[in-house]
Image 1 (cartoon, rainbow, N blue to C red):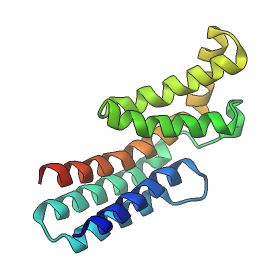
Image 2 (cartoon, rainbow, N blue to C red; image 1 turned 135 degrees about the vertical axis):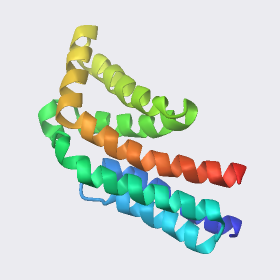
Image 3 (cartoon, rainbow, N blue to C red; image 1 turned 30 degrees about the vertical axis):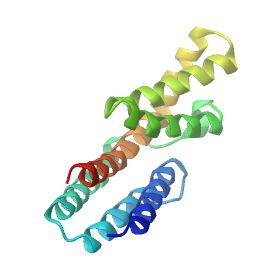
Image 4 (cartoon, helix red, strand yellow; image 1 turned 30 degrees about the horizontal axis):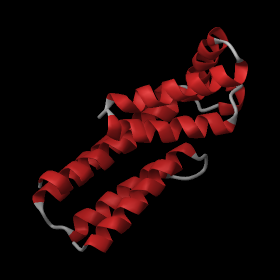
Length: 160
């Protein structure tokens, strides 16, 4: 697989990660399609293993989505920009502090932005609780289920 194809696959994966954060965009399907594209053009066994793992993880996420609270970001009281910034910080945090950085980035960014907006630590904590109850858990689980295949793809490129 050429370097330009890898860059294109990475761009599609990044589009899928942003798609998880934007309502109406099928982010998980876009990430899966990028992994499928990579696996079809790179016939190594590790590519097919990443594709199988991605498929199983995303299907499990779809099956268990009914158990998560519905996304209701407007009811959280936080501005849409705060939630988008938290999602982007979660993506960055996943790669800075592998795996747990996604959760730390999301929750920490919501707290920091809401504390600045509302002016007190107590109001920031209350806003984090509200955001996590109304939209945070489902967004974070969906984002995490897309971040794991992207991390596996990146790991396969580096170490395989």
